[in-house]
Image (tube, rainbow, N blue to C red):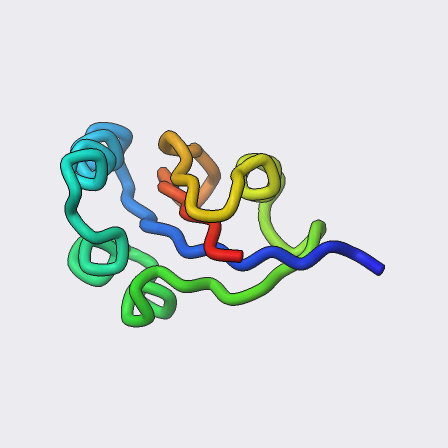
Length: 92
């Protein structure tokens, strides 16, 4: 049986945007609030960035590699994919 994890993300176009958002998170702003405000992924953005559960092979490789390395509650540095820059938070 494959392992399922649950993550949220914030997707933006520019690395500079992702770094600015990450700074806000580090200063205590809520991940979900920032996802609603800034994420260009409108589907998950409305749900505070929540992508639900997924297994390996369901996401693009750089995103998946980073997500599966995170511990629950941990937030990634910006990850570049063909969609832009993701900040990933592992929820479960």
